[in-house]
Length: 372
Image 1: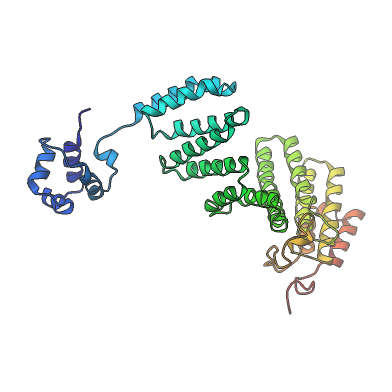
Image 2: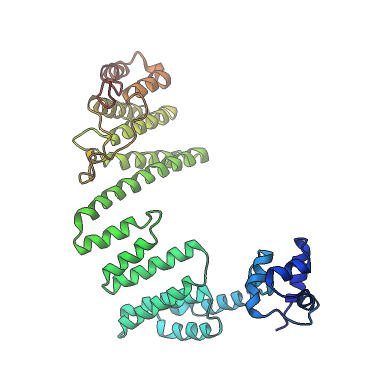
């Protein structure tokens, strides 16, 4: 392999407008040495490569003009060659190919990751189950050291934790997940393991927080999906996604009026507006009735606490949703009624709904949510 390092050093130096003297002083060699490098009369000592790369603020690979494209292609070809064996569960056929490839490409992340995955998959049907799991961990750990991609590192470390769980080492599995749980993305997995250990109270609180978090996320996604179907003219799916949107929150309705009532009321009024637009008047009145019911129910005895919702009874009494807006829900629904459904003002149902909203509407202070 012919090294091109002299030309790279000269090129990088000119790009940043530095002299040979400045490079020599930074690295700790003579100007003559730098001159010999750039004219390809000699190569830098391998121990100097990090300093030279730092001087130019480039990687050592760039300095050596090392390209891994061919290796990547060969690695991909190897993985493709055993893919069918992998899908068929023929791990004993696939693994020798991968292990042989790693002798040639020992730092190839995809090869290391797939080898680890093959070993952990084979473990479930192997007579050497424990050793396969241990070897899988070894290759996953090697893979971590061969990438700077944070997503890949998290994915691999999560799998390492999963193998420890499979081996029955719950404590180590928890420890491994906690090490990578900076953004709390693995809260559920950690709680699930703690529940198995018998730490049920703490785990259940996490389960309850997670079920609300995931449901609320789906609630928002379904709202955006509804807009997409509307914009695409797929109105039947628009209505279906809006119904799903409402059902998500209705599952959290409890004996105590709670924040889910507020969200349901808002969703029902939006659904009623769409029904009106497409002249689905039976559905429109039904949704208006439900919007009013949940608005009145909430304003009479509002609770923003998480533990007032179904499935959330173990959560701290101090945790809840923001109460920053000045009004409750009846005032907003009443405003929507007078703005979007005013053509029905003479209808007995409209009059009844408005009267109920007017009678029940309160400010946060009146309802005791805010202090005087």
